[in-house]
Structures are given as C-alpha cells and as structure tokens.
Amino acid sequence: MTSGNSSPVIIEAVGLTKVFRDFWLRTKARAVDDVDLKIHAREIFGLLGPNGSGKSTIIKMILGLLHKTKGHLTVFGRPPTDVMIKKRIGFLPEESYLYQFLNARETLDYYARLFGLDRRTRRRRIDELLDMVGLSHVAHRPLGEFSKGMARRIGLAQALINDPDLLILDEPTSGLDPIGTRQVKDLIIELGKRGKTILLSSHLLADVEDVCDRMVILYAGKIRAQGTADELLSDTERTVIETPRLAPETIVRIEQVIQQCEGKGIDRVQAPRQRLEQLFMDLVDRARHEQVETAGVVHGGATAGFLRADDARGDDLIETLVEEPAQPTAAKEAATQAAACEAVEAGHRDEVLAELLSDPVAHPPDKRPSAAPAAEPPADVDSSMIDDLMGDARPPGSSGNTPD
Image (cartoon, rainbow, N blue to C red; front, side):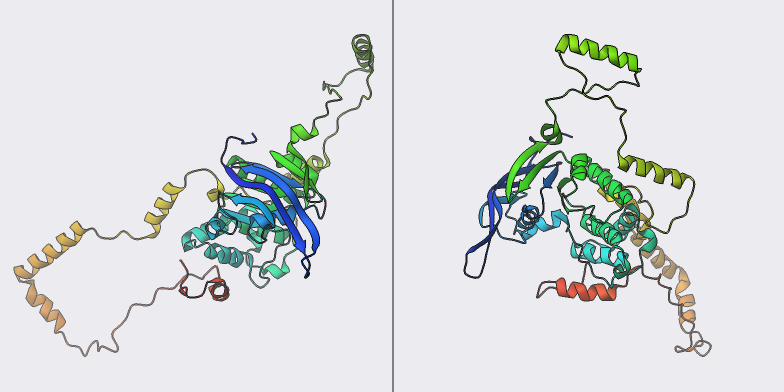
C-alpha cells in the first residue's frame, strides 16, 4: 500500500500536548508532548511505544474522551468532541468492558441499535460478524462465560457493527491465540484495501510491522521516529543476496570474487528459516484437513459482506421485494371497484343481502369460528434487557421507541 499522502486527511494533530495535573494544578505527568502527525484516508497507521509513552492518551483525545492541554487536533476536519463524527468511528479499547449478562447476539444488537440501524440490517450484520470472528456456535452464551480471547473477538465485532470509516484498535491481538492473531491481521489488511482508515496501537512490534503503511515510535510522550516500515527498518550497511541452495565450493568461489572486487568477505552463510507464526499456521491447517475435532474457537469465516466494497444496494432491494408483500396499485384498485359496481348493477345485490340476512343462530356472533392467530417466530434477541439499556443510553426527552 501507499502512504496515501495525496488522500484526504482524516486525523491531524499539530503541537498536541496533554498534561495531567494534581489538585493544586501542579504538573503531575506530561503524557503527550508536542506531537505532530497526519493520518490519511485508506491508511493503516501504527502507534508504537512502551507503556506510558502516550499511545492510549492520544487515542482518548482523538475520541474526545480527554481534552487536550494545548495544540490543534481534528478528526474528519472537526473537533473530536463533535458528536456528528462519532457514527463514523469504530473503537476497540484495550480492555473490552461489555455487559456480562448479555449474550453475543444481544450485545451486537444493542450496539447496532445505538447507531440507529433498522431490524433487518441489524440481523444481517450480526450474522455476518459472528461468522467472521468465529463465534456463531456460541452466539447465545452469556459474555460472562467468555474467555479473554473470545471477548476480544466480540469486541472487534462490535467495533465494526456500524461499518465505520475510521477504525481505532488499541491492542487488538491482546489475549488472542496465534490463529486469532493471524486472522485479525489479515482482516486489518483487507479492511485497509477496502478503503477503511485504521489507527492501530500495539506493543507487539511484529503485528505493526506486518500490517501498517506508516508508523510512529513514541517515548515519554514524544515522537522519536516515524515513516514507513521500509524507511525505518532498511539496513543500509549490508547487502542480502538470496539464491537456491548452493554447493560449498560455489560459495568459496563467490567469496573469492567478492574479495577481489570489493576487498570484503562473507560474514555469514546460513539456510533461511520460516517464521514461527507460519509454522504454527501450517500445522493447524494440516490438522483441519485431517478433520481433527477441537473444543476451542473455530476458524472465522470470510469478511462480513457489508464491510466489503461491493455495492449491496441491489441485494437490499431484492430483500425488500421478497420480505414485503407487494401492495396493490391504483390501477388494480380502480379495476376492482368497477367490477364490484357492475356486479351490483347486474342483479347480485339480492344474493348479497340474502347472505347477510342468513340465520344468525347457526353461527352466533360469539361462537363463530375465528381465524387462528399466526404463530410468531421465536425471537433471536431478548429485547427486554436491551430496551432497559437503551433507556439509560437515550438522552433526556427522547422517545421511548427504538428504530426497527
């Protein structure tokens, strides 16, 4: 991917500073110190640094959860406190604080209703996300019974429920096994290709190196280095030549040529080795092909359809036509009324009156057979608890009805 310097700026910080003070307004900690950065559209941007370097503080200021001490900060060209930009942001915090008594499906439905999604859209996205993160088989289990890795997966799903333009991930692979870690990294790369802007904060340097277009390295609240992975990691002091396996005598002759031409020798000759992550994934794939049963989290499915760049408007139209019965047109209604008038004029009035004046004893009003009420399908989501939560989250004076 490219660095996206010609793309619109999504996040811009100039001289961003955050100072925490005590009760007497004395400086307690300078968490962020004069930080300048720009994050462009369609870019995967990494925040690196040890604990206490200011990563989480920067994220909280971008989300409007903390006020800056000084400097300039905009998100989508607006102040971070502007409520109108919140619906365009998805956030996965370092610790997922979710309602323990709700199950996975109810949790996603609750957050989808906060974003005002209609019932059909909620149901479709929930199914796709649960399949994507590999939790479809535990969709009705309370979150209080989830492991940390499963909680991270459902947290990632809730961060994507609104199909955000800006996705902020704080330690997204924390608590995940190597399978989940690889899946999350693949998902981040794919979302970047689909046009999402992603801000990733992580302590795992390999994760950032694998997925990020650009990154900054923070220490003590200051940026110590920034650039692409190639710019920061290129070793200008050495040259690597890769070839198929060579015979020892060939290596000796190559070293003689290097000594004659450059006056230097070969420092090291070794066979390349694969990464431990790749070995792990190969073993897991082999076990899956052998259909070995496991009680752990199943492998996630494909990326949710609504997160892909495909235009889904045609599918929505088809679903609407299938689910909603066709309404009679004005022409049909007019034809029906004309036919009724002709029937009356042709002498059918007496038959209608005779039917209306038939003996009511055979079918008294209170004993006439009535149509059995249609059975309602069982609900996937228990909305009573979610309605209570929505009542707490709704601003004062708003209506009690939620969008369906």
